[in-house]
Length: 112
Image 1 (cartoon, rainbow, N blue to C red):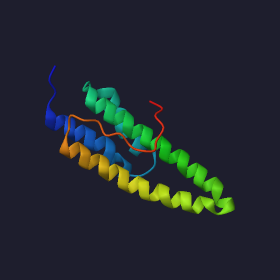
Image 2: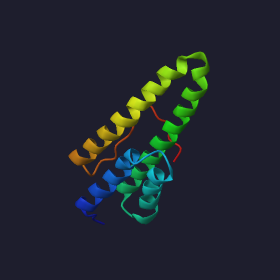
Image 3: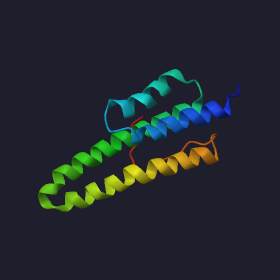
Image 4: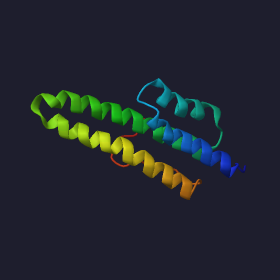
């Protein structure tokens, strides 16, 4: 079965770019909707990876928030803030370079 490369690229970009909308249900809702609607295996894998990234960022934010009591959390929150900007940009650039490849975020746990 062949898949439209432009559609694959657009849907994968939407999954990874949803991070920039905000950290509410909308940013997670887009990859979930794409995961449920698309039948393209590469798009589905990019959607899963995007969701895993969201869940990991939420966990790291929670850990950083708790650790602010001993001041280490501010460093953790700084790294999370940088990662939440840099890694989605790298994912978008990776998808633009090769839409047939799934981007794998570094330093995250895979729940899905």
